[in-house]
Amino acid sequence: MNSETLNSLSDIDTNYPVPRVYDFLSRPENIAFLEYVFKDPFGCHVFPGDICGYPLVAFFDDMERDIKQAKQIHLWSYIPTCRYRCHFCQYPTLILNPQVTSSQAVFRDLVDYNIKEAAMWLQNVPCLAQAEVGEFNIFGGTPSLLPEPELRRLMDFYQGHFNFSAATMRFEGEPGTLTKQYLGLLKELGFTKISFGAQAFDDRIISACGRMHSAEQCLDAIFNARETGFDWVSVDLIYGMLGQSVDDVKYDIEKILELKLSHVVCTKLHMEKFLKKRTGVSGERESLWQKKGLININNMNFPGLGKQYQMRELIGQYLSSGYLEHPTTYFHQNHQHPEKWKGLVTDLDKQYPEVAIGLGGSSKCTRAEAVNITGYRKYKEALDENRLPIEESRGVSSLQREVNAFKMALSTLVPVNDNVFRQRFDSRSFFDNPIIRPTLRTLVDKALVIIDRDVVTLTPNGVTLVEAVINTQFVTPEV
Image 1 (cartoon, one colour):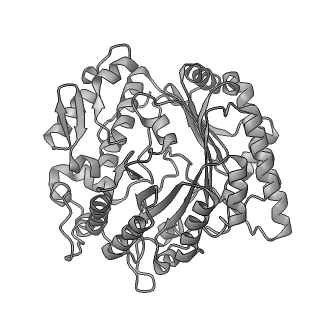
Image 2: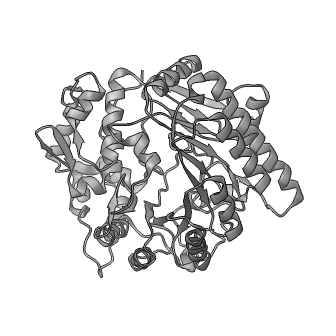
Image 3: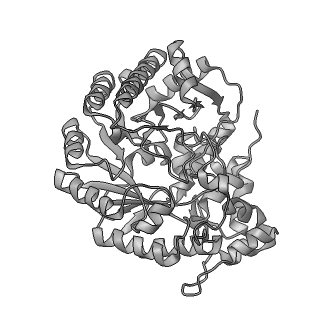
């Protein structure tokens, strides 16, 4: 085994229990898991197609077919503006000072191009206009930088051209920009859900990761959202960041419980490049932390893998009494609903199509997927030439459709029921799939899953390592 990875795994805070997964990851036969979790790509929800060079016309045909059959879809718009770039960020972003006059033209262009791209989707996939949108999200970047006239113009288009009759609307902002006035605008436009990245509730950690908001501004955003009438407020936290200790994460989770937040996302810091990975928003460049590497900065260090798993297990322990985890890393209060858009695309009885409009967006259905261009100049050039700004499209073979469906279901942490799977796949069982069947045998041998008749359930170690399970154990050759 690599001594660097083992040393990282052995970096443990003696004031807390040794992480449960330590024994599993330290065994030589589990080296693939250890190497993956040591530097894994951001986000576990990566379910790529296996047919390269897939024609765009075939991709659109597949989307049309699946959208017609789906009860609902997930529709989202990516607005890539930011006031600054966080030290961990690999996403495609445009750094703008919203107070500078010249930025106003960029905001107008962004909305123009977003609307043009959405209109081209409607031309290429005609059924989109009638498809029932289950949830509409505006993601960022920092879309809360959009001036009021541009946000109104954007929403006028989407609500006028898509079927929002049953849609819930969610908006992602940044604490320093989610003012009472802006929250009031979002409420007026029909948004009922607010989310933002706090990363931590300690100004020292917030500053170390390059964020320019404060912990106090995070609290203000939460209280202002509630005062404006938003009952659904989600905060993103990251563990494993520079200078962060297990005690720091304990403080953050205690703050979550004190605030009684309806939803919280607790994500591990991931340092692996994902420029070639297929995530919700495709990566564009190395982050500042990647360029510098895992080094000591101002006497601050990155916690090792052992401490990261102590943090992960502490989060689960503290939230277990009042929250459920669904899907992995997404927690919701017991009496609240889980993330709707995540359920639409990952729950085994759904797994409906999603359409992403904007720079670096990722759209998919069961039969095909496409990832948008991540460079803003090339993105604009494509749309100026009346081409959808799609970088690459892939098809999904019939075999891979079953594998992807099973992996997505596993990522929800909900037991995977073969009877539900059979309803999806014309009575075919996942136990008969030539990739799933041997993989399940391996996972049972490693005590990562339990099989009881027709149901596959993750063990506690399986829950903790589910990202590694779905991204290293189900190997399908590309066609």
